[in-house]
Length: 167
Image (cartoon, rainbow, N blue to C red):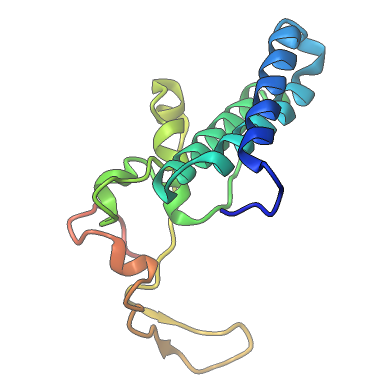
């Protein structure tokens, strides 16, 4: 990520320090839960802009996504069932063992979120893939075969030994 701001690294570091200061002052204000989450997201975005490589940027983003989900479940909707619709890679439990990524695997949101045993026990993940199978458009009568996955597509990143249910 390249920012077109003069002295962007210095400004980002100062902004991050300001976020730390504000968050420290507000840490006991339960009435500002949502606002505190917004500030934490801004701080993580700032850290992401400063990160040196794509793996670190993704880890920062997905860690914050897991914290956001935790907040939604525990604070915003504590008595509700929550459905998260996201890219299969982001929501996977144990994703580092499922995907053939670069030598330094990304720690996806689902893996971070389910480190907590309660979250792991209460989370059910449905991932979608078109590695094989057939499909039919809603208003079409013809069933078609799924095309072969692209060279760098999601489906080619999944290890063949990954346990999943085929519908």
